[in-house]
Image 1 (tube, helix red, strand yellow):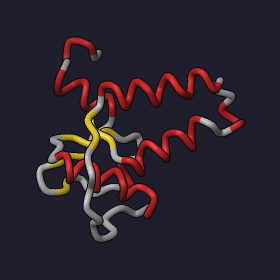
Image 2 (image 1 turned 180 degrees about the horizontal axis):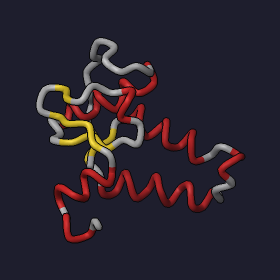
Image 3 (image 1 turned 45 degrees about the vertical axis):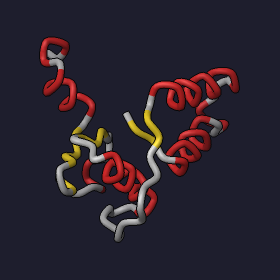
Length: 103
């Protein structure tokens, strides 16, 4: 798992949205888990490759990490592939790496 500063900022922002009602302690725990167990990357700017400009940071991170997969619940905003990275749903990813967990 990889993250960039932009992604960490985005996750912090989303977790703090009042409508989600996530306690501050839980917000900090999520961010702490990411920074503790995921690998930071410093991505390069890519041309706009996603339908939503805000999603490009995830593709830039995957590109910098040379990731095999980018997990997203919003596949329609991404190309099917970017270089060696394939865009997949969480379910699809689990069916590839741990098919015994998926029914």
